Image 1 (cartoon, each protein chain N blue to C red):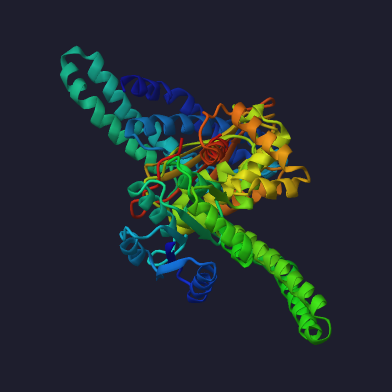
Image 2 (cartoon, rainbow over the protein chains, first blue to last red):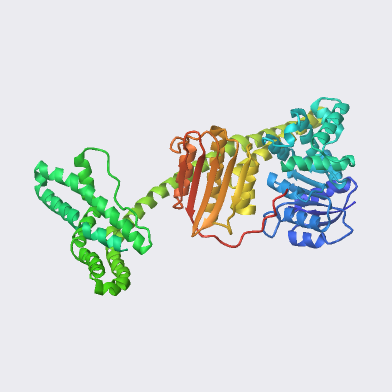
Length: 213
Length: 373
């Protein structure tokens, strides 16, 4: 898998490159500013991007803007956005196009290398990975239709799905069997009126519905 | 217009009475009768002066503020002394002289021109300019002189500067506490864990690995705390997206639905932006804490050099901004920029807080992305 990496801090850039390459990904281009990133993203042979939100020249949200722009050109282009802080607003903007293959994580999550690589793989495979902090913020909000129909347990499962966790991982976290998790997920799909489709697509759609409510 | 002139003509009688009362009262002030006369005459004079201010402000199309100093609490003597030391009282008297002499003649002229039918066309064209002249003189007499205006400005600035200094000192103390109790303490414990791991590597590698694991979770906690400290100083989303985006992000993080409408076509100066952002955050936090609303809303706009933010909620109401230290802090912080906060909160709601700060906007805003959904 050929990836582009954009991160302005040299230490972090080297660290991320090392982590990604150790897992068998190819960091084809590593840049430290938004201008070079825009150039690099034009390369059609790239299969995904890992981007820092805040970069030169303006040190605001150019990584996020680049992610949205490239996905407008290439719908579903896998992007994992890393940031020093996370905002629901930015998560919504990233997912506004309605496609999966998006990750939005706090930078410190990289410290847990296994989880981080797992997140990268999920994004490349078309899933959504939202940071636990974003998920917690959305959970705290009072929920309207159609999410009102979900039981608290189902909402919890949906939150974990948004974090990009597998059924096994959700089962372990909630101390239930994998079968129970699968049942909850099926209930969620039915209650949210998601059309019958591939399981992965339905997961992404469920998360989108949840984020938008 | 002519109606104003007619009113001014008819005022001659009461104004003359007031004039006589004040002169006689002033002379007799050594005897108690004089005091009674003044206590009756001065409020009457102020009432007429206020009427004249509103006429002049309508004729000239500019606002004329009511410039009297606030009266102190206390008996009539205390109040009378305060009134006598208010330069505006003496300007009012000067105006009184003008209003019963040349000013009165000008107003009378308007009526005469109208009543004497042959001069009707002069009246048609003359009423505007004549009343304009009268109003200009009225305004000059009934407003602050330059010196008084400056004196008052100095008072306001002295007070708001002291408040601003207090506020930033308090903020620095809070930051110092946050960093000292939070981040610094975590780093100390991190350093201890790593030190212990270092000594244990040889003898007990398993325990050492546990220590390193602990060190990592401490690091995560320290980063989290540092992040919240940074948010408290200047939220990154505010820096990225300005007030519009910052407030929208704030609204999303509230537990109740908050609708944001309006927009700011540029960026206000950074200190104003930050003060207004934190003011809105405080209002929303108060609403969530005390009012139990179902729904809240924020309207942002910038018009005629005035940045306005309205924060409303459909909760319980009955909010008193003087009760909460948070709201008083907001008022003081806005006052440093000549900004104001007004609260309307009847029992049973809704509560509507209006924040206004005069400021110019710079550079067109960075284009936000369209709202999803």
